[in-house]
Length: 233
Image (cartoon, rainbow, N blue to C red; front, side, top):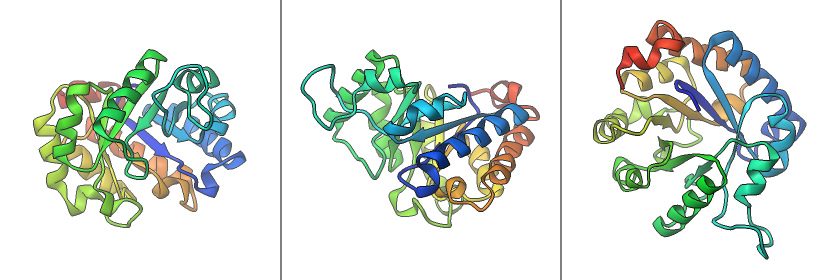
């Protein structure tokens, strides 16, 4: 997945499930094409086929460390890939994993050809995750998830400590992202993208919110295509 990027976690929100997820995916595709910023959706397993059919970059919200076999109720990485996902989230605060389980799940996801965004609740956890070499790390203090105050505003040191200590893995800023100002601050602190949920999914006008977020990426980097060169990550 190219950066800069906006990853929208649909969770199990009504507005991010079923036909609503498809509608949101179409919005994401339109905004991505118009603004030149990657917009990805992390959706529930049952929604992956029809969401990915819209052309949006599609992620699972979780996969288990399993291969084909007797694993009732588990999320099969290969199945997720064949359903149309290109990646998965792992270790979200609402689906936290032990270090060993995370290592196994990440390995299984890689073997299935999935990109992996691993969530970390703190810079210290992010540093422990970094040796596993995920594609991206999203830092999200759990106490700010779903709230109205973004980590980039309330605890900017969480972002700077993470970006300063981890140079070879793109860092996403998550937790409480609601406004364009939150996005701009995250970029100023060194983030390569954002992980957002209710701020987009439950917004009265998701398209307008996504456009405002994407605009900040373009303004910050002057143009999305040269963002990484300008930032010199």
